[in-house]
Image 1 (tube, rainbow, N blue to C red):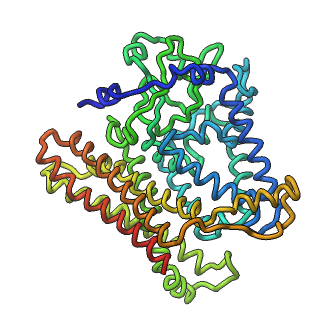
Image 2 (cartoon, one colour):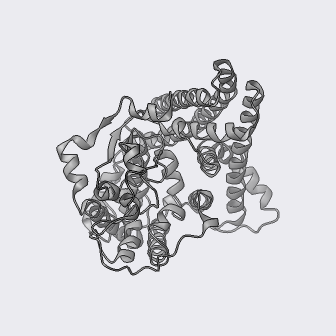
Image 3 (tube, rainbow, N blue to C red):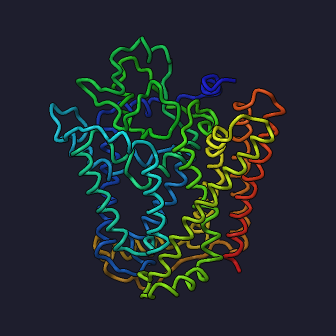
Length: 476
């Protein structure tokens, strides 16, 4: 079955529901959502910047790295890049650039320069996501209120500067350190925004308002042509195209979860490498950190002077080495197993298999990240109540310690581990299903497809086993 055929079958348009149709057609739709999250971010920023530094009772810290991060991961499965719709960071740059909050302004404050061609793609945001991971693993960003506040401020200022220099949301597409992470995991969503009729978006529409905009609405801020868009990779669900399309040819749909993982007709190498990086940071790197951080730090302390945590050069260098080693090992594994798939199926080249199968591994990494979220929810329940009480005692500065900490372990560690293992097995099965569909697209011959699938299925099983083993070591 063709990709277009897959996309038309079993589909439900939720835009036909009156509340949804009213909401997405509302002019200030995105602004109203961003305004709410901006208020929340202002409280988070104030608490993280000047509130108590204890990580367990700082509202800004717990809200960001427990509630927001958990909701972000869950949203991938349901709605794709839904956070990008509500993100105040990118909105600030857009508001400054457009000189408006949602209406079409007659002039712009930005220079509207095109983003440099050599910096397009996912190479730069993937590298910045690795830096993001290093800041957390090396400096403990998720345990530092001040670093969390600093990150929010730096990202907001960067979005504002880029918005004033470059066209559209160049920061959100090419520079945000989590845009590659969000976009790649959004491929697994059970939700999409797509054209209805391809003919109406081709020669039947000379104006291409969904991309260029018109006198009433802006075009796509992410520089996507919705009429040809085939994945959730860059769509931030802002609904500009829905409102600007004169033929009402763009719809919100429910779909089989993860359809983009196998149905993309033109998967790119930069996205495949980004997928390998994300999966490697979720599965291989944590194991290396758990087993080798102490010995590698001791080895590096022979040539680097020790310092006070978190600014300890040997430890920071060890973290950097192990993160890069985890990424390199993941890339080597995916390429090696892709080569085995080529040999097994007697294919001509390894690269197309590497690109296709790398995307299909995304559920393996996502399930490991969701397993970590499950641990937070079931073993640290009550933390949000503590920090909320602390915030109320000194709103919005959060400088007062609450009387006591009431974190509740809802389940025993072994029970939580069993649930985590089940979640990872679910991600493995999801990935295997995507790989089977990839093999059918790569090889019309069924036997060749099965031969190609077997090595990659073994790799998915290996990475999932590493995740289960790593989580088990934490119990010891």
